[in-house]
Image (cartoon, rainbow, N blue to C red; front, side, top):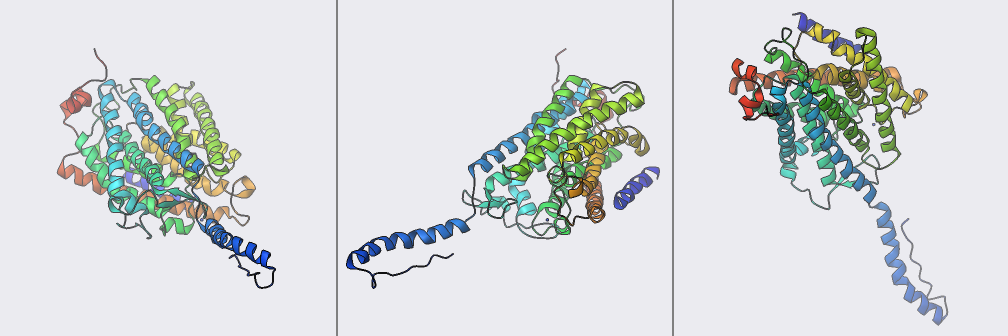
Length: 468
């Protein structure tokens, strides 16, 4: 009951806190020579005028935008494999290293395929308040000539580029959840849960926030690169999973320290590098907007690393490598929804606050909630995503260096942001609960006790990360 009250209180806190060319015939009034010259040039003029008009009306596809978006897509893949996989892998015990690497890699691959089969269609294949449609099932109608919108009306991208970019977002979001139930969930159960949650949670939230006619998009909610769609969404699903699977055997009694902080640090750095594609790529064009998202991602993350280190020094007496790596991820998470609409100073403030707040999220709040969120997915992604989404409504204000319009209202925008946060929390929690229940009935969620003690590397995959 205390856990339920704590979750409800968090939800209430969140609730409180988008010339036609003219032909002329001069032959009748000109000398014969002039008439002949006019007759010779008229076809060229008649042909070039409509061509110029058509050129002005046709949407442009710039090679620079295409090159940048392909690079950004590659960077997001780099975030997931190897970035997220190594970050999580270093945090678990050595006997579960390969199981986490497998879960991240295979979930990312699975969701990528499902995105092509039906995910893209349901998220971006048409208009709707909550979901799109099946018009582009199996990518039907998509070819080399079809185009996708950007933020400029006269600039487009090849639709294949947009599909690939958004596929990486879906894949890494589902992979993030793995960290909450690491070291104790069946591999088959992880995959089935990922399919259910992706279909009934990720796709509707993505459409509501980013899709044509989406409810939250229509309300004016700001989420440049996925604070709600990716981080709050995954964080809440992970917290529900931590409750439903129960605590790891020996949790709170046995040492469960990360087995390789160097790998965790490498993974965090790969995430930081890849995140520039995640955030700056969400601009969809190689313009100043991408540069703004890029610089905000740099500064916010740096500020969060420093803030987490200061917080640890004040509370524990020492700053840790694990803390610095966690601070980097916290800053990346918090700036994600705001990176395209706040100024650099606002980004530094958001990152600094994220470092302190997420440190509390993985310590004080985690104790309050009483869940064994193995790798602190909710404490970092959930809490950081909530903080970033709300602060987006503050620092987008032009008076605070943001890109909002002159009549931008902080109070009104924060309320809109809070509505988006609350909808995401409730939707993700309900869908995740049902999905975990279905998986438990069909396959069972948790590995047997003896397999958990031996480690999932051997019992689930028949191999070990390190030779003895």
